Length: 79
Image (cartoon, rainbow, N blue to C red; front, top):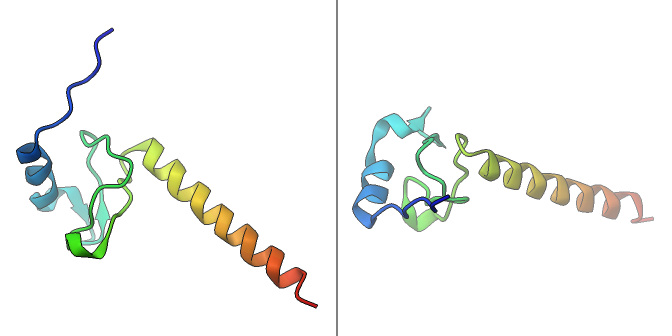
């Protein structure tokens, strides 16, 4: 089994600039892009979730669950 080729910088740039890969302006959705956290539309703002990549969505859900758990734990033990 061969490993998939890593996309070129030009391909990544093309995917990022393609308006069809951005749903409702904010949500990145590209089945070809296997990166866990691609850059946001305004790259200087950080990274976003690729909602077409299951690993990216699971990472997002895991991080949100972790932060919610920590917040609830702190709130319940504050007294």
